[in-house]
Length: 77
Image (cartoon, rainbow, N blue to C red):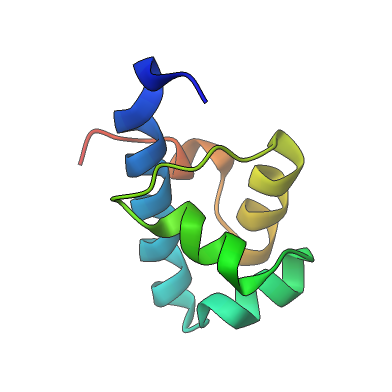
């Protein structure tokens, strides 16, 4: 992962956690729905552990949470 994008990975993880909680899903439930481990889901959301994800995973998360990818990548709030 390129350290240049650390802030963006953190914000992406926080946005995913925000929308996941709005839907009432646990990390395990979301992870199961997109076929990744709960540990990986936790790492994606952890602000102190910026974790890169594939576009496929990003698209799957947006699909399950019923939000646009743009919403997950919006860092201005």
